[in-house]
Structures are given as C-alpha cells and as structure tokens.
Length: 327
Image (cartoon, rainbow, N blue to C red; front, side, top):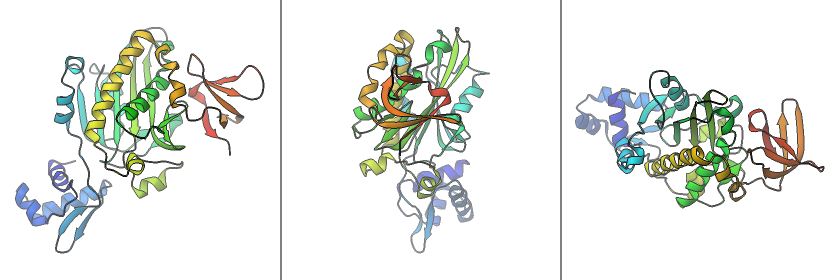
C-alpha cells in the first residue's frame, strides 16, 4: 500500500464523512490522487462509499494496528528482543517469518498483517480474514528439545489463547474444538497453525500462526465453508485490536517459556476447562475412513480420545484427521 493510501485510510478510520477536498488539503495532494487512493482501498476489501454533499465514508469504523502503542506496552525486559513488524499486505505472516528465518534470527519475532491474502489453516485450508478488522499474527520461537517434544504445543497454544480471551473479559463460552480451533457456540472464532522446521531430536524452529475473527464482512462470511463468528458479533461492541494484540503477545511469550521449561505437562490438565466437545457425539475422518463415538478429552500427548463403545478408547493425532460433530 502506498503512503498516500495509508494516510487517506487513517483519516477515514473513525467512520466520519470527509470531503475529497478536505482530505486533499490536509495531505497536500490533488483530489484526483484522493480518488485514486479511495479506489485502491476499495479494491483491498474496504467498503468506502461516496455520499453526495458529505464526501467519503467507511462502511464502519476501523482501528489500525499501531506499532508504537504495541511496543510501548511491551517495553519491559522480557520483550526487548522481540522484533514486532506490522505489514500492510502480505500473502501469509507465517510464510513471511519462515522465509525470513533463512537470513535472520526470528526467535521471538512477531509479524502482524492488516491484509493477508493467502492465510493457511490446517489440512491445506485457506484462512479468510477481512482486511483491517481482524488479527492475523505469527510468532517465531526456537526450541532445543526437538520436534518430538512438540506434539502438544498446538493444544497448549489453543488453551493459552482461550484463557487470554477469558481474562480480557470476553464470553467464557469461548473454548476449543480439538485440536486448536477457537470456537463459540460451535461456530469458529479463530484458529492456530504451527509450522516446525528442524531435527526430530535436536534444535528446531517453530512459527505459530493465529487468525482471530474480530469482525467479518458479509462477503467473507459467505465464502467460509463452515459456521463462523466474530468477537463483534458475540459482544455487540467494537474490539480494541491493539489492546488484544498486546495481551496475545504477552500470553504467547509466556506459553513458549513455560513449554520450554516443562513441556505439555503444564497444560494437559487445563484442556477440560476449554474442551467444547467433551462427552459429545463426534465423527473423526482420516483419509477415506471415518470413526464415530463420544469425545473423551485428550491423553498426555494431546491425542484425541474417542469412545467407540469398546475398551480402550481410540486415540487420534491431529496431523492427519479432521473432527466434526455428529449429525
């Protein structure tokens, strides 16, 4: 995005109507340049209308991510080595950090994007996020223990995100669908994806990607092939994106530090507080096969336990299966 477009968007962010003349005078640009910037912003998914006699107006107010605000709140020693980048547009925040890892240290690095074009979910699914209205965040972390020790990291991350949202005052019905979907009343509110690079039993690099629906456009809701919901729909209020990002970065840093020192053991017992499928009929799909039963929580490795009416419970790892409620 050009500097001019970003300046125009910043002026319109409050949702108030502003004339092209006023915008041009304020920024020292022509009305034609203003019109061009508006056109470009609309092409990015921002609905800016032109009202006769009033000027340009966003369909609804937005809050731009503010690096200065975020970094100021994270100024203590624990975050001094946590480079935070806010990108206007990118294909994927996680892919960006993984690419950067070849030329710089991304341990503790955080990348946020206002507009993500090719977000990734589990099992090669695409993640949709309305530009400038949601949180798409990735964070890098280096572990010495190796890939073998990280089987429960995704579940631990899900627990951390759900707990953080409860502590921030959001509805306590927000919980988790195994392995790490963030849900509310069986509708998807967000999701996590962890990429791992390294040795099975040696040093490895992880990049945790988080997508969280703060607000969803009608167009994006129609394009998503499952029940979904946003925080604004749950609360009927606008969400302070910067404040929530600050809370999430703090929580994810604590997650990684705790997991480094004590592994999944510190998180397993917390799963029951957030498990929204426990004791419900579900179907597990693995390749061409499907398995029906009652979800019975997880084991010490984070595997799903399924009661199919026989002992012992069947167990499923997250990498190769999908899970849904039974019809």
